Each structure stands twice: as structure tokens, then as C-alpha cells.
Image (cartoon, rainbow, N blue to C red; front, top):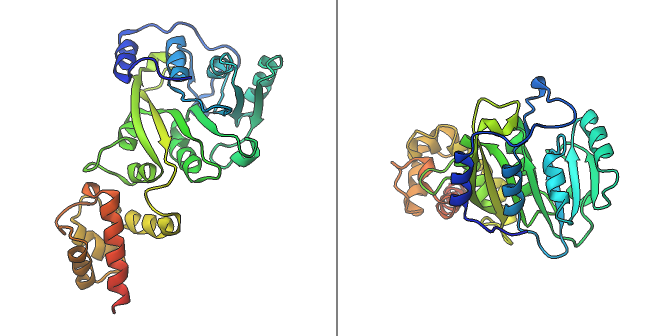
Length: 292
């Protein structure tokens, strides 16, 4: 599967379409669980079209729901593992795809599931899914931090989350940095509420994450890196020299020395720093503490 149209073309076509093409079949969505089942066949086709399938790979679908996206993915002929957390939907999917030899239905929580148990050793995989709004962040984090990692992921999330995930340097957040360490994030297209049953109160967006062969932060440094960055982001509107003094173990003098040694203006805010600048600042901060 490969992209045959630009993301701009896809986005424009989706915005121009006002009427969904069909309703969801199978069990009804449960409001208490925040379920919104994707029902627009055009959006489904665009998601499938955006998947970059490696040779000999496996597709892992996250949150199969009533199976509309599952069916579209299965039709490509690729081996498909569909994850669903709700038992009634798992039963429905099992019945629906009982005659599809390339489809395996698995009940599990995508925030916790062991992908090594789903994908045969040595086989590459890609992840696809219409993610529940409330669980999107931990699902993405588990995907990117786990072993094995997907080669890429095409996921639908709330539009505001998509904008945050794909934010450029200068408008970073803890979420965008967490994604960018592991993957290159690309905003593909927006999806209106009419594409879902029932329509949510917000717009959604589809994002593609191409996972890096090597993360931008060496694995041994990642725990310290995210601990340091998350502390600095606790007050994202504060200038860095104040945020470091208030939220980390650095004294005012140590924070000033760290910023100077990392060649970073202390009046900047956390959102303006690149990953390389955060790494330089962390190294300088560690050196400042060791010098005491």
C-alpha cells in the first residue's frame, strides 16, 4: 500500500464531502465508552492508501470496533492482526471475519499489549487505527517505546492532538518531543464529525508516524532526558532560567551556568528548544551538578 495522492488533495476532498456514504453495521457505539465508529468509505480508503506496507510485513490494527477499517485493510490481502478491547465487539469481529484467513482478531488493551506476541519474530509491521480520544497518547507512546516497534503508523486522533504531535520546533510540547524522539510525524488530513457514528463534538485528523531506525536520543539517555524535559514543561510559559530553578534540582547559579554552557538564552521558553538543544542543556545541567 502506498500513497497515491498528496495529503493536501486528500484533505481538500474530505472537507468538500458533507454526507457520509454508509452507516456502521454491527453493535451500536456506547456513549459511556466514548465510542465513535468511522463509517465514511472515502475516509477509510484514504487511511488504507496512506499505509506504507513493508515487504513481508504485517498490519496491526488498533481499536477495530465494528470492523469497517478492518474490512478495508483485509481487502488488500496483507496479513492483518486486529486488536479490540471490548468483548462484544471482539465477538462481532470474530463472526464477521471467520472466513477471512488473513485476519486474526485479538482482544487486548493497546496501551499495554505485547506486540512481540502479535507479530512473528523478524517480521516488520505497521500500525493503523482510529484511536479512542481518551487513550490516544498512551497508545502512541506504547507503540513508539515498545519492542518491537512498527516501521510506521497511520493513526486518527483528535485534531488538536494531531496539531500538537506534528508541531514544528518553536511550538513544541512534551507530547511532540516525545513523538519526535522516535518518529517523523506528518499531518495527512482532517476528518469531520459526519464521518462517524455517532458524530463527535470535535474534528479528527490522520497522522502518519515514520519510526526512526535510531531515536534522536540514545536509549541510555532517554529516562533522564524525559525526566528533565517534563520538569521544565511543568510551567511552559515561564522563562527557562526560572523553570529550571523552580522545577529541577538546579540552584539558580547552576541553572544559569547550565544555560550559559549550553549556549541557550535563559529568557527562552521550553517550547522553543529543539531536541538537540534539550540534550545539550541536560548535559550541561548534569555537569553543573557534578561540579558541586
